[in-house]
Length: 267
Image 1: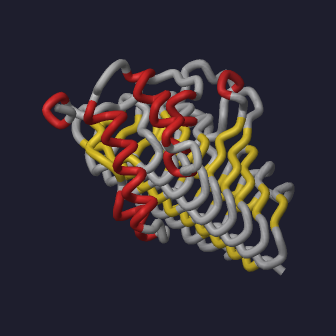
Image 2: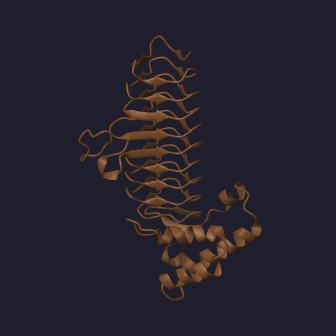
Image 3: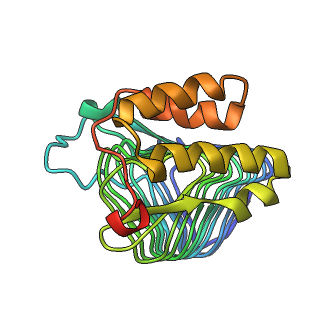
């Protein structure tokens, strides 16, 4: 039987697994689904059409599933989904989707959302994403698996952050960040490959060398047009999955331009 503190306000219509733990002064709305092992610490609020996957933890004063902060939102039914084992720390805010963005906000499994982070409407986060304190996503942002977003950074609406990328703290990101890339600054510029993150994932030296070479040709050498360089890299590294991740990311339809290196770093 679920462990629910006497001071918690839990709507009888909420779907709650038998081993869920709900702490003091929590609020759980009628359309919420809490899977097995979910733990709500004191003063957590979960509302709207929100599903928390197995083992999700929500800490004090987090607001999960509150209506989107979008003036176009008119109360249409939309959804927030949070994957298994994700940790949502104090004062985080996560909003469901909107009709104009597909109606669903998704946070993957094994993510860590540190204190004060914000996931806006219609965002899509892959597995293993880390958002450091007060990192903020505008609406419709896509963040690839294992990306790291530094503290106090802000990602512009409709921007994409590729898998394995790293965004430096206090960066304002207006453009798309390539997979495995690093960006920082106001406004954020591409500064290289996230070698540390790749090594932590077990990427070997030969793979790193090929990735660096492809990066250098795309963003540093600057011989010919960017499309010419992209075509050459796609052909030369046709069998390299990491390089092909970058090629596919660049070739995909996008609403924002790519984050590029500063001119002095690209000479």
